Length: 239
Image 1 (cartoon, rainbow, N blue to C red):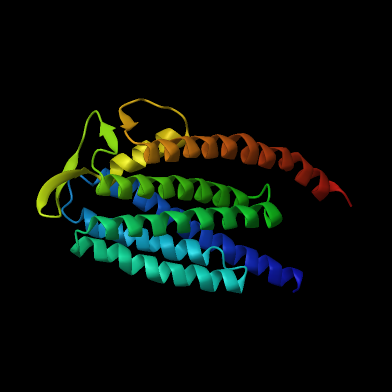
Image 2 (cartoon, rainbow, N blue to C red):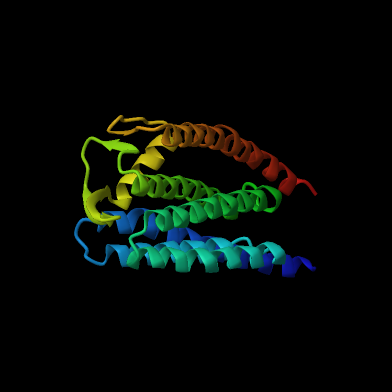
């Protein structure tokens, strides 16, 4: 492939990462912001999840096999996510969240590998690094969301904004998606305000794993990228 072809491919890949970043901003910022005022929140949430699934799969398009696999998983995960709007089945909801979360983690890893190998210390790498970080936070958010939907006592909320659902034959209340996004990123950044606390071993394990992942990401990957900036400049200035 020629240099011009590589440049065109890089620009195309960068545009896909921008689409992914926009989708992530929509589902992590816009949807939670209107969660308490919009009656169409569930619809917008599924639209956002679908957009992230598809854009994440396409953002890893450098390898055809990975692209096909990613699109296949996205085509399975998206309909399952939409099904949870119409069928209040806790196990179906948990399966949907686990499928989405694992997919988001895999796509984050693949994006980071691409960024490190080909686009370190460039604008492209910034889009990729931010998208991967947000994907990881979203992955854990849907994990917590699914577990708490199955066991409403899995997390204890100091200030619970809940919505009613029917679990089995009984009506109960579950926390809104925004609260799991909040808990996920507070955990990953190790802020630990204490207003949301894990109540069982599964959630506690997920929480400490996310904390370690977040610290590893910031301390190792970001530091590595920053150290590469002067190296890239030196290489560029060399004849």
